[in-house]
Every structure is written in structure tokens, then in C-alpha cells.
Length: 352
Ligand SMILES: *Cc1c(COP(=O)(O)O)cnc(C)c1O
Image (cartoon, rainbow, N blue to C red; front, side):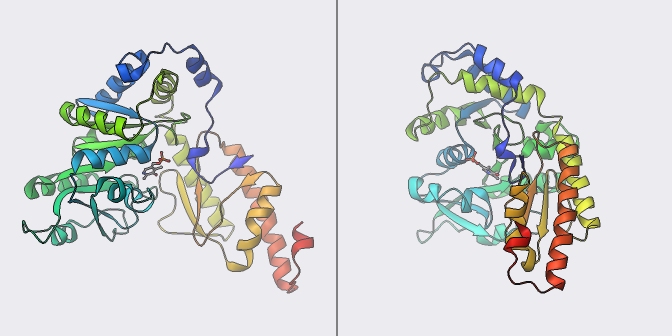
């Protein structure tokens, strides 16, 4: 199967499974797991921070990050479409009594700093205490401009806010800009990143920050049920991913670019501004949308077709796979076009 729904579907490779099978482990809640300790050390160095914490998921990493930054009755400013506002089941509010202050994101995925400034609350008993600005890099595959990160750093320092980056795919951003991760992370106080997306590890995320912050975050991780025991099996996969699967993200970006060009050439509507790191967004016309997903699935391709359809490239999708996809798509369009011409209402037989 060629699965383009997300880079979360990536499978651990043979070589990764081998290091997992052979991993030396200990009880990480006692601080005894050598692979977890080594991973946290390597991640801190990579991010240019004092310390890092290994967590099961990106959602928990963001939750722990917010719980550590904010107390009950504090507030974080965040994008309307940000993962840690919209897609994490309201965890910060439900579990932390932390109030989100969502604002619209600009088209490039940034939060306009003049708008952020306008929602910072005065020190007055009527209001929650504004503590934190949370931004997302990449957002919808878009890389936040370096100049914006720099401005956000200066801005948050002036306003006395902390700056958190939900960097689930921040290594895609670093590779796209051809800079080390620390070039991006130097501007924030804390960041999270996912090992289980394009990096190809089966499980795991990291939270990076200064040593005192990570010490407190470790307590919140335990409280939220994320203190794992012989987690070195997972940390070994994560270490393998950081060693072998970062620079190759470039291939995924090149493949997304190629895919966007080929689909455009077929007349498929690729949404501006085209491929963004490892993602391509499409608008599929209504008369095709219902059929495209099932038609492709019967032929070994999994797409999630929606009002906006997102295709995500990753390490289990090769250029040859994408060539096959383009051949299939051309065939699909021919069938869909002839149906439209003949005004066929009962299309099932033909598509079948
Ligand atoms: C995937 C993702 C997360 C975390 O997802 P998990 O599935 O919980 O690991 C957080 N933020 C963003 C932007 C993401 O894309």
C-alpha cells in the first residue's frame, strides 16, 4: 500500500527494529535507562538546550509543556488552528485550568505579533494572567520565517512572556532551511518535537528546555501517566531516527514538490503556494471527491479525501510509488471525465 494520509504511518525499518531488539534497558522512572538518558542528552545538544525529556506522544509533550509554563488561572496565546489548541482535546484547559487565548493565524502560519500584543491582559483581577506565546513550526507544512522567530523572541522578552514552539515537525523546517535545529530553537524557551512522524520511530516525542524547567516537567510527566519503565527500547528507535532519518527528510520535501508539479500538470487544483516541506494540499471537485478515495484504495493507494485533501510524503513512499500514483490519477481523471460527459448518475459499476 502507498499511504499518503500522514507521516505518522511510517513503519520502523529492519535496522531500527534491530537496535530496538538489542537495546540495553533499565527502569527510566528510577533514571536507570541508559538509552533514555542518552537520548535526552543527545536531544538537548541537538536543540541547544540544557535538558530534554522523552515522552510517549506529542500531545502529552505539549500538555506537559503547558502545565510546566502555566499555573491554574494563567493563559497561553495560541493559533486558532494550532495543534495544542484545536487537536489535543482541550487538555490544557481540562487538566491544567489553563485558559487558551486563540487568535487567527496568518497565511504563513505565524501569529501576527501586533494581534498577540492586543490580547495580552493587563495585571487586573478581572483577567487571567497571560504567561505564554505558543507557536507551531512547521504549520500545515509551512516553515516559519527565521526573521519571525527572532521577532517573536524579542517581543516575548519585552512582554515578559515565555515562548513555546510546538515543533512536531521542526526538523522538517531545519532541513528545509538547511540550518541546524539550534538555529531555530535558540529563539524559544521550550520546544517539543515528534519522533514518530517523518523520522520514522514507532513512538515518542521530546520536550527541550532549561534544566530547572525540565526537572519540573518530569513531575508533570509522571502525574499525567507518562513515566515509562524499560523505555529504552523506544529510546533506541528514537536515537536511530535522529542519527539516520533527519537529513533524508529532504527527499520527502523533493518528492512533495515533484508530486505537486505532476498533479498540477494533470489539471488537479494544488492549493497555493504549492508543496510545503512534505505536504501538498489539493481541492478535489465535488463530482470526483466521493469516488477518488475508494477508487485509489482498490488500487493500493490510501488517501484521505476531504474538503481540502492533504497528501503527505515520508520515508515509506518512494519516487516510484509516486510515479504509480500519477499514472493511477491520470486513469481516474479519464474515467471521471467520461462519466461526467455521459452524465452517468449510477457510477458505481464503472468505478468498480
Ligand atoms: C502530530 C502533532 C502533534 C502531536 O501528535 P501526537 O500524535 O500526540 O504525537 C503536536 N503538534 C503538531 C503540530 C502535530 O502535527
